[in-house]
Image (tube, rainbow, N blue to C red; front, side, top):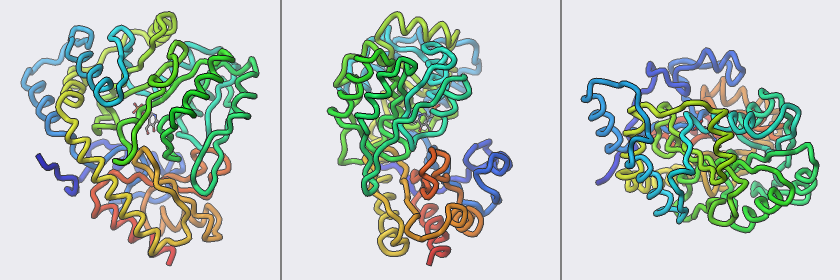
Length: 393
Ligand SMILES: Cc1ncc(COP(=O)(O)O)c(C=O)c1O
């Protein structure tokens, strides 16, 4: 079956954070302009219809006409679908008892911080990085310890010497790894993952690996889960259908925790949690029946990267960028224009009326970057890029 990713579906009026939360975005300073004409490419969700198998499963659920208390642990299909997906696609063998359902990966990060660390502890992250990592640390009264990534011509690597030093400090008890990395797009390779795992293990630093972008990579790339290369006894791994199948509003994350003691601590801090009947049906239909959809989606998203690269090569020639190995986001360095971050922001958000995400959100030192999310129909993306180009010509 051929899926149509070109269709522009109007998401305004659907309570979408991406398309309807303009007042909020103005209030929190993401943008000062948001109206009917705004093209919104900031939040990492897709403007594509979900896989047909997911929609059919949801319709079937509706026909049940009752939505009482549900529990995924009553359904071997839930575990089967999940376990088969990771076994088939990543050669990662997960045992059902290792899986803890959590209503969101960010939620899980917060739970992990509370379950495994004490107020005042240091938690290592690698900036520039997805802002909720910082929030999960600071809002739980722990301290951010930044192991800054090294940027060489838009290709990012890890500073292992600095990581080792920080891991050795007894105050630092946890590390949150973003793999693949949002926003820099690296898929950490087996050697890098092994080294991180080793440094964490040797220094008693608990490692939380957020692998939510693991399915959404370029077609010529392969994703390596940290579970494939390291002993996961002190590693907690976050997985989700949320990004992969555009169902983030259904809140289905599964956190894989091999170590029983850690798992129980996490579960006790989380409390009772179970997906809605819609979440359960979605996970099963997504993992069992939507793989071909995902493969076509990846090709389409690669095409959007091609489109972006054409614009960069021909019309936004001073932007520095490297095609990300994973994630559907591009990390654009506007410093070549010699403008202040505020001037770049005004040109894009106000004058072009396109909402992206300012680099400063991902950490100090990234002010001259913009992050753009590309999983939108090509014509929409094209219009956004045309508008931006006009401001920089
Ligand atoms: C690295 C990373 N983790 C987690 C999330 C959000 O996950 P969830 O919707 O499962 O809370 C995102 C969304 O952009 C992300 O980029």
